[in-house]
Length: 195
Image (cartoon, rainbow, N blue to C red; front, side, top):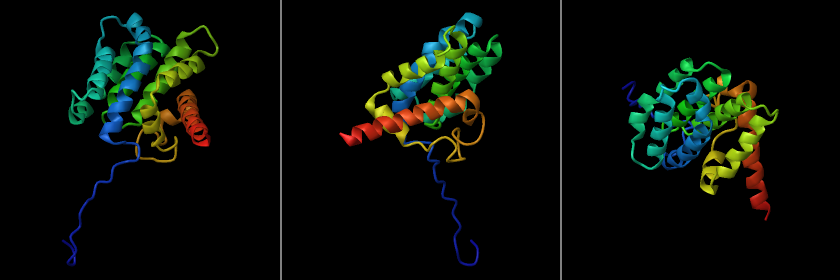
């Protein structure tokens, strides 16, 4: 208490957090994105089950079987598996799984899972449009509820308090992938509103 005033630290959640209900929705989609490229990692490190476990935890969180607090403590485990990978595609696949598990902490990590999965697919593919093809697949898998939840997130770089702030996800191909997803989400929302 200072000068008659009681100072309280009101913890305001980041706009990148999303509600727990929305995080559970987007966790399943993030797990789908990560699981699609998981074989890339498993071909390089078949005995390292950390990414697969992270994806399963993301799915369990989505189903309401796991609490956010427990998942927050475990969110970095799959990311460490990236050291077991031998190619950029394998590293990206492990990081996609880690991002999917981190959705329990902050919803914006779903876009990280998407971006890393697109990087893994692009790096592993002989096609020059491998990443774009992966992003198109991801959008087709997205339910209306997931799209609505992801639209609540700030645009990449607009908020510094989380994964969509300045940093790894905001740069290079990862940033490009997230910007593409966010642009497509906004376009589909605009198209739906115009009808």
